[in-house]
Length: 457
Image 1 (tube, rainbow, N blue to C red):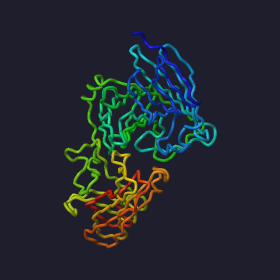
Image 2 (tube, rainbow, N blue to C red; image 1 turned 45 degrees about the vertical axis):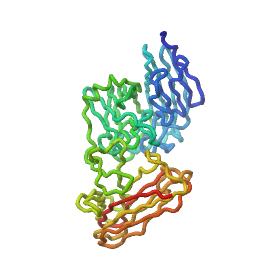
Image 3 (cartoon, rainbow, N blue to C red; image 1 turned 120 degrees about the horizontal axis):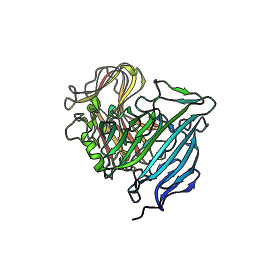
């Protein structure tokens, strides 16, 4: 069979278009995001249409802010081509043009028709006040690549999750990161330099990011849907203003590797441990006795979701969250929350609903939350609550604007086990996010057990 004709670019907008190989569409760019990228003609996409690869610089923190992301003033042009390759240039800026982002994106194909996408990224801080950057403790602060492979996570729960782990290759060092929803240290601060690779494994075709020459990156894997963020780290933990004239550069390639090539590496790789976070209690969906954790035998860690903790006000350093293994209501397990100072804190489950593989909530239904509560040395109030977002009522990212339905409060200094109940009103439209909150406002120690959320008609 003769090799396909070369690459071509068909513009569809100022900031997008189709990339063809021999007349077949093998990738698209929309709003400076790479989507529907296929590693060969006729192959399944490595990157789908839902979440593209940004071809612009942005900060990991608050990247929706138009001053944190160079996704304004977008334009895309073909700049060069040759036998078997095509180069595009993606240019963007922050809304105020405080930085200029330039990505040179080259599509190439080998004699077998395997397609590779190579990216050279440059960030320049414009004259003026500089660019304020917020560091991040677990990921590179200024990101040049974010990849969410097609099918790695199915929010509707109707499809099997693909790619059960990530493989990190640094020279001869091989490490494997299991896909679970724990926000754990095995996913954080993955240091990569030229030639190092991060791959999602182990399907027929597997996406591989290879770091380019001169780039020292720090990657992080998200606990929600296992997308990876590759960025440049800044020293220190405080915000820093990059002065005018600052230039940052990075490069990488995106390609596919077959299962046969990666399987021996996966077999030799050392599995990284999630550490102490493996003791995190699991959201079970029924009545919670808090016996189960991510260490429990037989638990499918790929589909399980963790309980989380939050301190929203007051003495942050004096709050302790513990899974108690000696004091419980129906058995010897419970969640304990203790604060030595005045604080507002909560155990919370925020992974309920269709975005997390659960059935959709019913329009016109009600929700009932029950929990057993015990206190010692309480000075303040304890309650349980439902925090609800409904479609069409503001952003799902603005948690402060959610509706809250709360139980009566317990204020007794030393209260033996008692039940608290929340019954929501009829919910129409239906919720698309529901959070369960087990809250302390004040100081003292409180235990929560036998927590149960029920959907009512």
